[in-house]
Image (cartoon, rainbow, N blue to C red):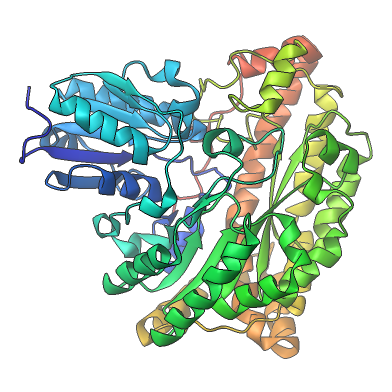
Length: 552
């Protein structure tokens, strides 16, 4: 077998596929604008930069191209990994690589949290690669053919590498990620980020961030950059030092990018920070709202969200040019029969169009998991995927524990909220509210070629939405209302209308499968029905039997 540190070593990096029914996988919208997948695989590009640079490196993202036998025949070693929702895909890559005689390196969040599931890999790299990949390379120097690597320490982000952005085709993606920090200062019970990356936020230097922007610029990338941080505003003082420098760099380079990120809701308390983000051209922000129930927030230790005037907070974000992508959860212990109605009002009144609503999931190694285990309520094997067609994310495979309220009631509420918020009329009402309150000050200026592509995309959208029986009247009413009352927000309104193509199909898939879960509970009873659902004994309709949203 080839020595892996030889100059001729060929390394294949594989990003396993995400389900087309995932909230984040809006591939049908990507097709409208000529892309194949929303986000580039930043984790693997970072891994590639940490590996020996004399290796021949090839990155295959299964979300944009098929992984074929020829890829494995070319490779000497395969690197893969991912999140819980990619678990079956990672295991499949391991098997295929071994069938072709390749050694396999596995890492990422799920292998770090559940290493026992990945024992078939030759090398298991846990935690953050800046510390553990050098251990792997040192082991390879010694001739090791297998090993597991972990460190109790957390790397200093000041020494982080620039990801190998050159390994991807930018045209395949709508956005490219840049990471400024890791970790989050809060202590949410259900969150695994603080377990994986800590509560002390670690940041790159301003110079490092500018260097990565410059690399992307020099490679010819223009457009949407997503700061993939767990909480971009976790250290507001440092962010306020970073943003003016990004603004100056952007002005000097003709504003080649616009930005999005994830932030805790408390950033709305800082008017200066909001203005600075607007000046840099931040256009989207993901906010974990979770629930309008203060008691549930307190139990979940998400105290930063307690006693929040959410509608006012959202309007403030819109007033600074940013659209909110909101995360919501059903299944907390303190919920009541009124929770669903409160959540519907919260989402509708605050105008959050892109509402990611899921059911509570006890992720491995979280405080929630430890508490539920102590209480004897955890389904012990609930984090092992058995059906990659239906166990996609917390929108399809949550509640892996004995619920405080009857499980059937939680799932019935789940269906009711989804049916309401992704009803076409309700969704377009939220777009109109958001667009009329959105104060855009666009800095990014697309090239003529990009404007031409946007025009073609608009015509495609008109064909799919504007002349659609369910959405046609709503679409044209939206366009003309915003055009006359807030013309700067027309592009944003049209983009949100395009997203409904994905959300409507995803909602249908989730509701149908949730109704089958409810039928299973009705047949077997609350606790047994819930437990067997999480243990793979339920009979839900597999995703491949439905029309995939990526289909023409």
